[in-house]
Image (cartoon, rainbow, N blue to C red; front, side, top):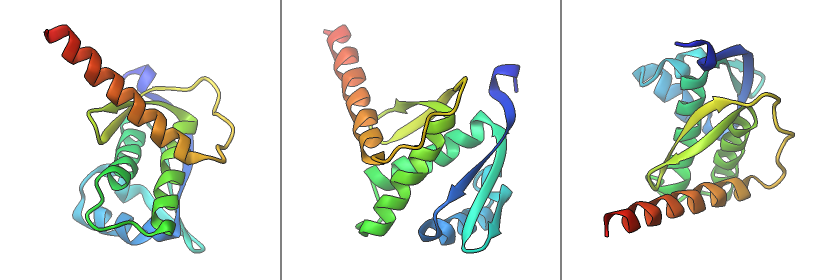
Length: 140
């Protein structure tokens, strides 16, 4: 880790609808961030100071939104959008292909809470489309 990858610890709330999946990923030890989850009331929280951890959380949320294993309920879609938005508050997210994203740098100041998290999903889709078109144009 470099200095730019770490900052003071932040706390991100994982909505109750996604709690089962967070517990499953922690038990399967898919990424260290999922083992950092703890429960407070009905919510799960993650405390981290790692940009890599934020990338994992944001990527999980975006993959669930873009290519869910089964159709998403309104609650689960809203929960994934909220989780993506919460990571976006603290880090700059960039698309990585059509369905993945990565946290590239910490924000100097956290953004204010977003009321319309679906706008972030659309923004990431648009950026990914723009990158794909630009890459295709360079090859021809």
